[in-house]
Image 1: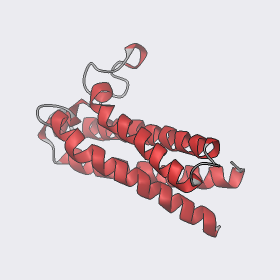
Image 2: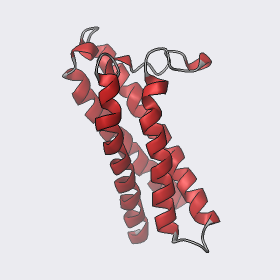
Image 3: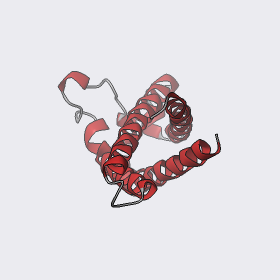
Amino acid sequence: MSSREFRIRGLIEAIFFLCLFAAFLWEALGNYFCTESGREIAVRQSLNIAFALSVWDAVAIAAGLIAARALRGYLSPKASCLWIGGGVAAVGYFAAVCFLAPGGQPGPFLNALDSSCFFTEGYGMMFPLTWAPLLVIMTTLRELLTRMVLRRV
């Protein structure tokens, strides 16, 4: 990956993070469990979940890019990157409830990425039904947008 491609991917990932943060903040401000402790807690938890999911998005697309290079002779690089990256992203997004819910974080990260208000009461069940599929679609669209930008620049 060239430095130009790395910078463009980093910029688009930052925009993806800001969009996630805005969406989660919008949900948090309308969620009783997030605003019960105060607005600053809702902002922090929105920041935490947006950061964690953006990092996972970057890991998933990196896995897709590595697979695309490895499978170059067998599949289209674009298709393999989208399918494998989207699949890795889906696994992480659907498993987010296990890692970001209260008490689900591993030892050294315990409560570091606290996003508990998004998984309190029925929201823990609604995250995989609403947010996870939407995030997979957003990851795929973000990678298509990245490829369009890289082709034009």
